[in-house]
Amino acid sequence: MKRHPHARCPGFGLPAAVFLLVILAGLAAALAKLGSGQQQASGLDIQGARALQAARAGIEWGLFQVLDLNPASVRYPGTDPDGAPPWDNAYMPPCFASPTSLVLGDFSVSVLCTSTDYLEGTRQVRIYRLDATASLGTPGSPGRVERAMGSTVEMCKTPAGSAPLYLCS
Image 1 (cartoon, rainbow, N blue to C red):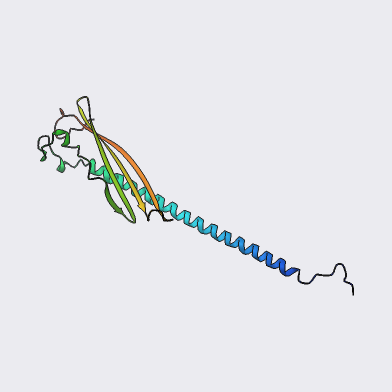
Image 2 (cartoon, rainbow, N blue to C red):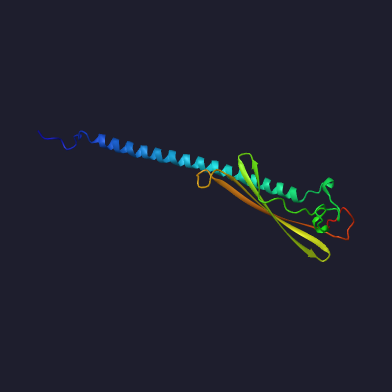
């Protein structure tokens, strides 16, 4: 018995259906992985923004330490308990102990302060350099986030000025 040339070939549809299912399953798996990666990247982006704000808070804390103009803490020239010259007195505090570690929420923040003194005519000038690094997670882990920020601020005083406002204008 001869087959008609347009007769169906039995079993041809099954391999095509399996092939199509495998392709669609692979595509679904790739899309799921892509979506998961995007979600993780978005989470790290948010943590990075939080780390930047934690580093900024560390800088602001450091600035408060070196620029504290609270009159209750003012020391007048010649009254420094460590016998230092007026250079180390009112309104020009030395750097705080560096590095200082702070904990802000989930973040660990390290703040480093360095200062340089010089004379500008009769004015005494101190430049403070503050560097803060905020981090979350262990180094080498996929969820590790770290941001760093720096700031420089200058203070000066004129020894011939009237106490306690030695600040230069």
